[in-house]
Picture 1 (cartoon, rainbow, N blue to C red):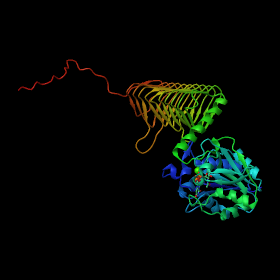
Picture 2: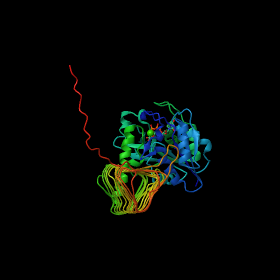
Picture 3: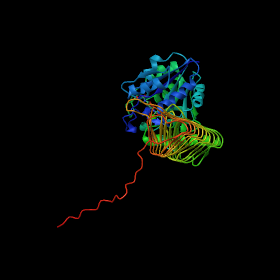
Picture 4: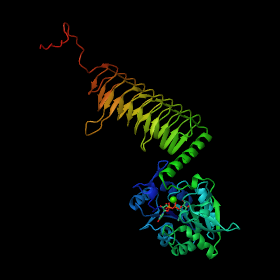
Length: 466
Ligand code: UD1
Ligand code: CA
């Protein structure tokens, strides 16, 4: 059967009080619309499905986002934005004359494909199927009106509802499925005679009743998946609900979260067995934690693969930025460490406080425990990189590599001016600025000799007379 999906994303989102179009506000690190597009693409696995996004307010930005988030999705502009019914009117020329149309709201982000699929089945190309939910506080939502026999007669928008109608807790979620040919006719005949002088898509329900089309409803399995975002408060509430469900799934899988209410996953987090995560950590992009990994409190970790038994101490920032940072098994990182794109650490590497690593490979057993910078470098096994030492990898125009071979020891407060190589087993004396290759197995020191002046006395303060 032909399935058409229309995602409404043209509204201004006045209550967000923001210059950013509402559907581009982020939930779990992704625009609201991105979540809806993902659900739509999960439904549209067969080729007879196509998706249309209605854009309007902030259309260029929304269309750019759609183009990079999904392929083969069409955008249609709604100018000006005269309501949800008017939005669907814009899609009419693109819709076929057969099959089912599924309507999704760009501001109802957590809809699960299974739930939408069940609604499409309930429609079956013949009935009008509404996804509903009962809410304790239904403020702002369209209320489902039923006759004494329980049959649905229509939807009344909050702003148009009487006191009595507002007491109805059964609401429309913004998701419906309808026979496409009928929907095309019904939306073209809507009027805007209501409190907001808008063309309400929800008025098609009363129209279906008139046309003798059966109106069926199915209740959403959870509130979280159908809550809409209309204000910063609703966005924050939905974010916490979503994060709580992510945390519950991790707990269920055996991950030990110190406090499931203090975790944020903005992407995917994959965990092995016996993983422990302390409070207030943020995971972004794709993060993998192998068996026995422990993450201390207040870490921010984005795009990283952490090996078995590694410990990330508190306040560490790991940012792979699409080029995953690799931390080898049993490595110890932090507290207060920073691993940047291209950091690749072997087994049992130790990176301590205020150490920054960028675009560098550190082989097994290498250590940089205090106040150091390693950029564009290749560091051998068991190298010890001393406190306060850095690679000077940038000459103001180009970046150069530093190579530190196995078992070398770089003393404290050294500057390795790249390109430069420190040979295997070499020792660099503290305070050295190394601009030429240091030979293997020997001590290289590059600093002024210490001298002592005998008989020297401190200056004495001259007393002013008068
Ligand atoms: C809508 C429903 C309401 C339902 C609620 C569920 C209508 C008239 N009301 O109300 O019954 O309970 O969703 O969340 O449909 N949009 C456009 N063009 C427009 C207006 C809106 O594309 O001209 C888009 C918005 O970007 C948004 C969606 O449609 O993604 C819903 O619009 P919104 O104004 O938020 O409708 P609600 O008042 O929440
Ligand atoms: Ca809404």
